[in-house]
Length: 209
Image 1: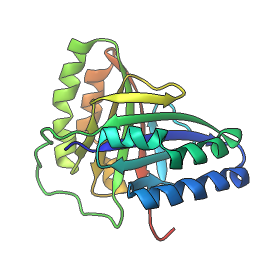
Image 2: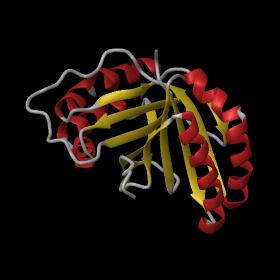
Image 3: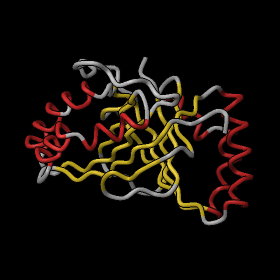
Image 4: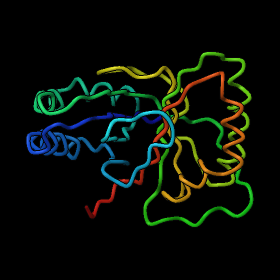
């Protein structure tokens, strides 16, 4: 079964007021059993724009992720967030198709994984296909693995581009190195003129925080 993912992007105007939301939401997620992949780690906006706070949370399925958003636990927490932040919130279905084939020696695993979260508006579907094929090389070289690649999605709050991709890497350094590599810069050249992207690299959530 494909996983489901929450991807909220937030700008928090009042961290102290926001804390009540965070505590209630975390308690509900703990009871429910969703898995926090990204929150509060090192981050770098690689392309375009992203809000200051980015979260990635995994559910057992897309339908479960949508149902939990509308369910009683999160419905109680949600109003506590709104006075203290602005949020773009997407729920998207995970990828269970082919993965990039490994190329060469994989990068060393970091203590924490790294992720790309990419939101893309495609203006030329046919032209974009060359980019989609080409990224298999940099992703395979740097240990990238798709968690999300298209799939069903629903924008719950705010605005989001039409296409979302999330790639998991062995570490944050590998995620950055992949983007800066000659192989991925070649891929970007193939994408130019066919799509616009907002991409952020983020270190995985550290349970020791």
